Length: 112
Length: 114
Image (cartoon, rainbow over all chains, first blue to last red; front, side, top):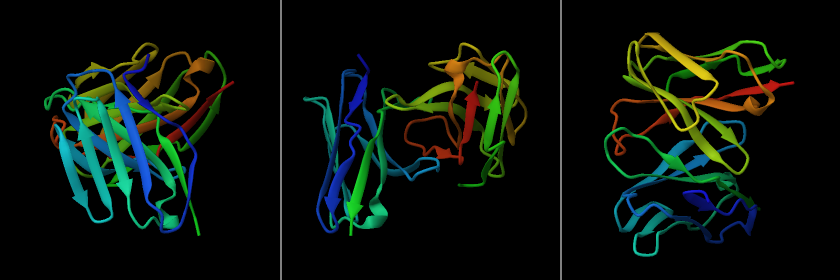
C-alpha cells in the first residue's frame, strides 16, 4: 500500500465550478503538507504549503488538513481553463531534510 | 523554471548503455534533488545533494549514481540502463534542507530505454 493515495482522475468540471481534490495518507508522522500543480510537459510548481492541521487560503485556493482522518484537501474556487493541470499532494514528517512523499497526482480538466 | 535547466530534454537509448542526465542551476542553491515520475507513482526521490561532493540516497536509488563537482551542476548516471528506468526525470533545487522551504523543479528529461 502506498503511503499517500490520490485519485488519478481525470476530474472534469465546467468553468466557474469548485474543484475539490484530496489525498489520504497512512503515516501519522506527516506534519508538512503541500500541493503542487504540474502542467503538461512541465515540472511541478508549489501552490500551497500547510503545517499540521487546519485551513489555509490563498486567493482562489484553499488547503485543508485533517490529521485525525489522515486526509488533506485542496479546493479551487471559480475554476478557469488555465487551472487544467495535474495536482500533486506531497508531505513530509520532519522539517529537516526536505524529503517529500508525493501522491500520484490528479488530472483536472476545466472546460470553458 | 527558477533558473534550472536539464539536458538532454529527450533521450532514447538501448538496454545496457550508460546514460548521464545533467541538471544545471543558476540560483546558487545548496540542495539539489533527482526525482523520477511514473504514472500512478507521483514523484519518487532517487538521490539528493546537500553540497559539492555531498550526496545521499533517496527512495529509489538502485541502478543510479550521482555526482556534484560544482554547486551549479548535479549529474545523474544510469550505469547500465534498463527498460524499468524508462521515466521522466526531474531535477529540483532548494535553498534550505527543510520541508518549509520550496523545492523548485526543472522542466524534466524524458528517457526511453528500449
